[in-house]
Length: 110
Image (tube, rainbow, N blue to C red):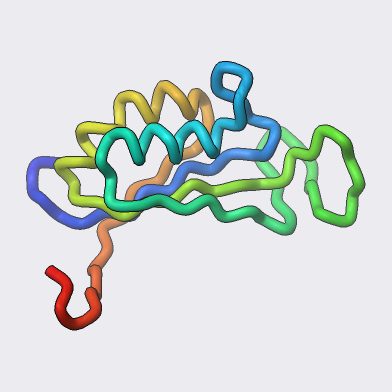
């Protein structure tokens, strides 16, 4: 991604995913913070499914819940290029999407 476009990166996980015995979504946020990314958000889904599994919902009480979570961050393409190798390693076989976005900043912000 050679130009310095603004990108939205989404990493699709579930609550049960781990990185070194800790919740993967929080470990990705920590990595993004430590890497100097502007910000990141974890969104928790009410229901979801993947190609290899059935539908999981909040109404199914399950101790090892596998509800969907999505980690998202908006960043310049140069920073995305920098963090992507580690992000891909952390996410393993999970889906990562990248979309070009237009950022509308409030007045007074760069």
